[in-house]
Image: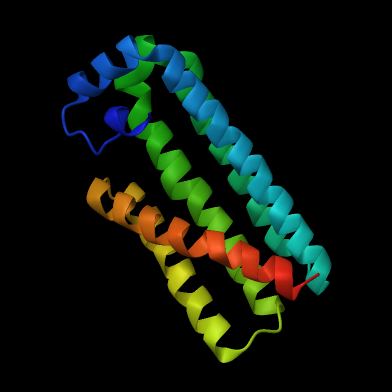
Length: 168
């Protein structure tokens, strides 16, 4: 729903056309992404409580949420009228800044969590994908951003289940 108007499509005019012909879906997609960001911060808060970690990682997570919601509101509100001029900034803000801050939060919580070596190795690969996603977004290399996103999501979902069981 969002991919055809992201930097994965090289031609900005083609992306703009997609936004213009799918504006409702575009806006609903980003609203869903905001809900996902809120649930991520809730998860981080829950995790911090379970391991009695410092609140410092949550500061990074909260700043990530601010960056994420700002970027997504730029894309939602601006729509077709501002897409060409604002989308590069918005994509760098959500993919680079927000994801980077979420990753720092996750790394901080991981370091505060008692884990076996295998779990730490799993987390290291997962958070490395988060770092790669941010680097790809900052450098505007969509294939790195997309590939790292796929790895991060594929690892983060089972990680959440693992922690939910481990930290009950």
